[in-house]
Amino acid sequence: MLNLKIKQRHHLKKKKLKELKRDLGDYSEIIPSKANIELLEVDPNPFVLVNGDPYVIIIEGKTFPTLKAALKNDICGKKVVVDIGAVKFVTNGADIMSPGIVATNDNVKPNDVVVIVEEIHKKPLAIGIAEIPGEEMVQNNSGKAIKNIHYIGDDIWNLEI
Image (cartoon, rainbow, N blue to C red; front, side, top):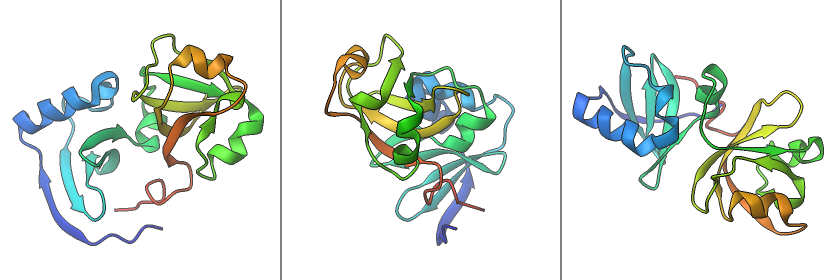
């Protein structure tokens, strides 16, 4: 379990909430209109709590949905599907390699935030940043395709507030 020293915890003003939703882009639907939204300032990365649950993490100024948000909300953003053989590696924090990818959204571009799901149940395993276009991820037989930034079992996943 992640042990955090909370520096500050406060509700987000409407202007900041609007900026947050804009920064989330395709994933902005994880923040409902009538939710209790708070910013939790901790080291090393601040979180945005939605009704008390960590739904957004801010890493180096960039906003990412958490896996808890992806599981509780059917996220419609960009997804990458990995085969069963890749699941063990992804959930241990490994970056996602092209040979393990079986499908992607057509519009995945480098630097896009993507949700990595397994092929049978389509359950989220990780959140990552695409390093190559989606079509190349599926076609390539070697090389890294996605940088893994948050996965099931990491400190963010185990965060309890």
